Length: 140
Image 1 (cartoon, rainbow, N blue to C red):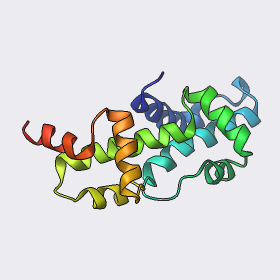
Image 2: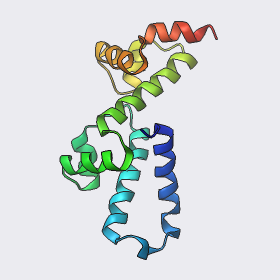
Image 3: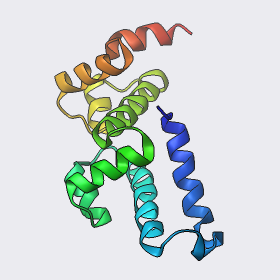
Image 4: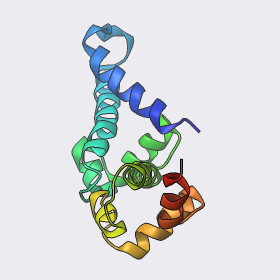
């Protein structure tokens, strides 16, 4: 598994450096598809509080849902929904430690407005509830 930071960094670097890479190294279609997937990583990071369904992301790239999911998994080693959940939980961890926002406010801010779903997802990924995570890390 590649870390989320690695995936994001690779996506941003590829976007920034794409104009300097020789056109002949990959087919134009492959370059467009890779670029679209890298742009999706950036898009996800900027729109965590929005609806980020696989269908919407696939439409953004011009792929079918199945094709998009397979390409995403092949490129980044993680399924798109899992990646989105991990990004949301990471953002929630940051907000829990750095703000006094309520759990409901944080859940909404990261796009998981249903508080029980937010708590379940958080616990599944972190191994702790959001409230306990905040208590443990506020003492640091």
